Image 1 (cartoon, rainbow, N blue to C red):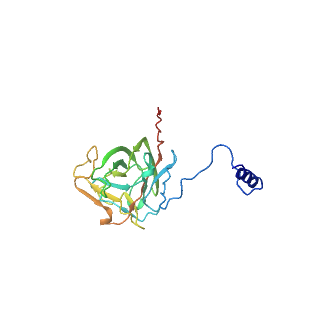
Image 2 (image 1 turned 30 degrees about the vertical axis):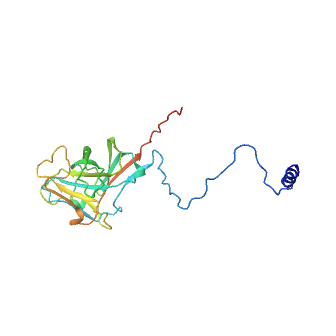
Image 3 (image 1 turned 135 degrees about the horizontal axis):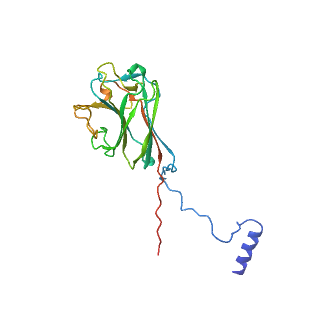
Length: 236
């Protein structure tokens, strides 16, 4: 035994054996054949951007100016973006749509956690805010009076109700028609003014706008990821 110990000591001195450091050592559990891909969570406060359009206005849609028209986009944020606060909504209005500064609107926000394609089925109205058209041929930016929280997972449904009734030649809903996402919906109610609260679906007409004009409403939403509080506990 003494002879083996002396041989090992000599080998270590000449560098043929790795030196053994005192204390903890790095170790691996072993490479697995089927590694798991881990999806990184966005840091708290990271932006949430809800956009369907490509930034180009190609058309404007209306229903004749005799009824209040509703148009909404169905957005599906990534599961890792929940929960988040929606704080801002943007919409484009075009002079070609005969929209005027000061026209009355209602900004509406719904959630839908059913996972279905129709945003009306199982929807829940979260927010409604009276607003007016601020600018023509430009993005109108509306900061929400209070942030709207989406706990998800599921859809954020965002849009507007045009309240102006000029009687004709009124197309308030601007649209990008480059490549449809098949997520833009529209409709109207039998009653005037629309019911309060304006729950979905409207009782007269409710359609995926692609049935008539394939495209994406130029309605966008912006918010931030909410910090998730980590719970601590003691182990006895």
